[in-house]
Image (cartoon, rainbow over all chains, first blue to last red; front, side):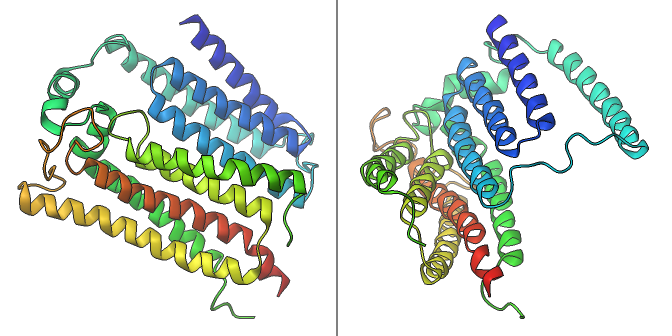
Length: 177
Length: 145
């Protein structure tokens, strides 16, 4: 568990660097460090399926950020300015929300079984009957595309909606000059 | 746009094929090893972007890729829905596995309709990521006009 805690501390530190540093390129790279630390955390928690997706998406997003920053500017004009009243109000509201959220999350997490054990009858059913019912050796795929395929459909719909939004904003054809 | 330096072009030419091969492996073996449609589609899209960034494109290519990636995305989504509705007719409920006992568990031909759904999701996710990339890359042609 100690390595996971070190990883989390590293992620928080990299996140603070990403917010506070003045050079936007360094900020994007710090953000990438957070993402890769998430991927390492997934590997540590024995979730290679998620780790693959996380690494690929993180590489893509860092490439996007670096491409945009190289085309525009390195300097963050908003960094280093003094915080005003509205900023402090936002910080306080967000801090209270984050405290309440984390408090109840931790309370709920402590009521679960330890992470390396199956959580309940449903997870046990997936582990013991999954191979016989679906024929898939990889139980994660069995859950994602058979037992919980409706969730995957929802996920695909979210992606579809995002692409439609991007298309309607950034389309090449039918623009009025 | 003529792309990046010759060093990047040579490396991209060598690596590109392996990236696409790995993407296909992750998709087709999604029911046996870690991975699946979402990861494999993202890997394929990443390989595509590698080649595009290395070799550069023209406005005409951007437009044709934008259209074809939209078509592929809709096709992938419709394939996934078709598998779901076939499950409704064959197995009795939405997303029922069409032939779960077909093939030997642990081999490539197994797990019924899960590999088919993996392929559909891969087409959908890959085309979606590519189309967002092409849209963002083609903004330079919008603002130039």
